[in-house]
Image 1 (cartoon, rainbow, N blue to C red):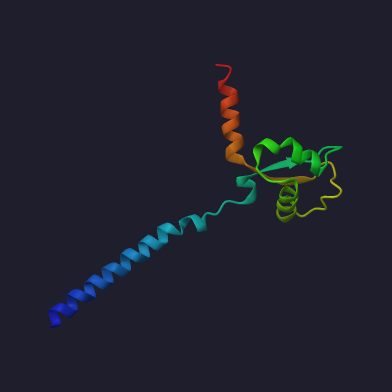
Image 2: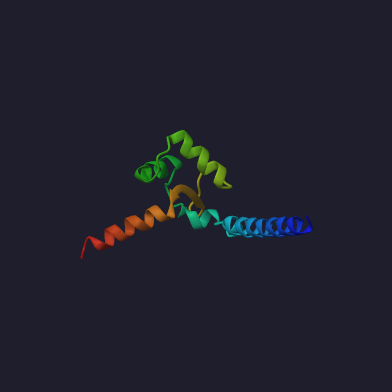
Length: 111
Protein backbone atom coordinates (compact mmCIF):
# COMPACT_ATOMS: atom_id res chain seq x y z
CA UNK A 1 0.00 0.00 0.00
CA UNK A 2 2.84 2.40 0.83
CA UNK A 3 4.43 1.62 -2.53
CA UNK A 4 1.25 2.61 -4.43
CA UNK A 5 0.90 5.84 -2.42
CA UNK A 6 4.52 6.73 -3.08
CA UNK A 7 4.18 6.04 -6.82
CA UNK A 8 0.96 8.07 -6.98
CA UNK A 9 2.66 10.94 -5.15
CA UNK A 10 5.54 10.91 -7.65
CA UNK A 11 3.12 10.94 -10.61
CA UNK A 12 1.17 13.84 -9.11
CA UNK A 13 4.39 15.75 -8.44
CA UNK A 14 5.57 15.20 -12.02
CA UNK A 15 2.18 16.20 -13.40
CA UNK A 16 2.26 19.40 -11.33
CA UNK A 17 5.76 20.19 -12.52
CA UNK A 18 4.85 19.63 -16.19
CA UNK A 19 1.73 21.78 -15.76
CA UNK A 20 3.71 24.60 -14.17
CA UNK A 21 6.34 24.58 -16.94
CA UNK A 22 3.65 24.49 -19.64
CA UNK A 23 1.80 27.38 -17.98
CA UNK A 24 5.01 29.41 -17.85
CA UNK A 25 5.73 28.92 -21.56
CA UNK A 26 2.15 29.67 -22.59
CA UNK A 27 2.11 32.91 -20.62
CA UNK A 28 5.52 34.14 -21.77
CA UNK A 29 3.75 36.15 -24.50
CA UNK A 30 1.84 38.05 -21.82
CA UNK A 31 5.11 39.03 -20.16
CA UNK A 32 6.50 40.38 -23.41
CA UNK A 33 3.35 42.16 -24.60
CA UNK A 34 3.98 44.53 -27.44
CA UNK A 35 3.02 48.16 -27.07
CA UNK A 36 0.62 49.94 -29.40
CA UNK A 37 3.57 51.53 -31.22
CA UNK A 38 5.10 48.11 -31.89
CA UNK A 39 1.91 46.81 -33.48
CA UNK A 40 0.09 49.73 -35.09
CA UNK A 41 1.04 52.54 -37.44
CA UNK A 42 1.90 55.88 -35.84
CA UNK A 43 1.51 58.97 -38.04
CA UNK A 44 2.53 62.58 -37.52
CA UNK A 45 -0.20 65.07 -38.32
CA UNK A 46 0.60 67.66 -40.96
CA UNK A 47 -1.09 70.97 -41.74
CA UNK A 48 -4.55 70.33 -43.22
CA UNK A 49 -4.83 66.69 -42.05
CA UNK A 50 -8.19 65.56 -40.74
CA UNK A 51 -9.48 62.30 -39.34
CA UNK A 52 -11.56 61.87 -42.50
CA UNK A 53 -8.44 62.29 -44.68
CA UNK A 54 -6.54 59.73 -42.58
CA UNK A 55 -9.44 57.31 -42.89
CA UNK A 56 -9.45 57.75 -46.67
CA UNK A 57 -5.63 57.55 -46.99
CA UNK A 58 -5.45 54.21 -45.15
CA UNK A 59 -8.81 52.75 -46.28
CA UNK A 60 -7.09 49.92 -48.19
CA UNK A 61 -5.05 48.91 -45.12
CA UNK A 62 -7.91 48.28 -42.68
CA UNK A 63 -11.43 46.90 -42.90
CA UNK A 64 -13.26 49.29 -40.58
CA UNK A 65 -16.20 51.55 -41.30
CA UNK A 66 -15.66 55.27 -40.74
CA UNK A 67 -17.43 55.09 -37.35
CA UNK A 68 -15.37 52.07 -36.27
CA UNK A 69 -12.16 53.81 -37.41
CA UNK A 70 -13.05 56.91 -35.36
CA UNK A 71 -13.88 54.82 -32.29
CA UNK A 72 -10.60 52.89 -32.56
CA UNK A 73 -8.48 56.02 -33.02
CA UNK A 74 -10.29 57.74 -30.14
CA UNK A 75 -9.75 54.75 -27.83
CA UNK A 76 -6.02 54.44 -28.61
CA UNK A 77 -5.02 58.11 -28.57
CA UNK A 78 -5.23 60.95 -26.09
CA UNK A 79 -6.41 63.75 -28.36
CA UNK A 80 -9.39 65.69 -29.62
CA UNK A 81 -10.13 64.19 -33.02
CA UNK A 82 -12.28 67.19 -33.98
CA UNK A 83 -9.16 69.38 -34.17
CA UNK A 84 -5.81 67.83 -35.09
CA UNK A 85 -2.64 69.91 -34.78
CA UNK A 86 0.52 69.68 -36.92
CA UNK A 87 3.19 67.63 -35.15
CA UNK A 88 0.63 65.67 -33.17
CA UNK A 89 1.10 61.89 -33.36
CA UNK A 90 -1.72 59.38 -33.74
CA UNK A 91 -1.92 55.62 -33.77
CA UNK A 92 -4.06 54.23 -36.58
CA UNK A 93 -5.65 50.77 -36.87
CA UNK A 94 -3.12 49.69 -39.49
CA UNK A 95 -0.83 46.82 -38.50
CA UNK A 96 2.91 47.42 -38.85
CA UNK A 97 3.39 43.88 -40.21
CA UNK A 98 0.98 44.63 -43.07
CA UNK A 99 2.94 47.75 -44.01
CA UNK A 100 6.24 45.84 -43.86
CA UNK A 101 4.86 43.24 -46.30
CA UNK A 102 3.78 46.03 -48.65
CA UNK A 103 7.27 47.59 -48.45
CA UNK A 104 8.91 44.24 -49.26
CA UNK A 105 6.66 43.70 -52.29
CA UNK A 106 7.22 47.27 -53.50
CA UNK A 107 11.00 47.06 -53.19
CA UNK A 108 11.15 43.68 -54.93
CA UNK A 109 9.21 44.91 -57.97
CA UNK A 110 12.25 46.79 -59.28
CA UNK A 111 14.47 43.69 -59.32
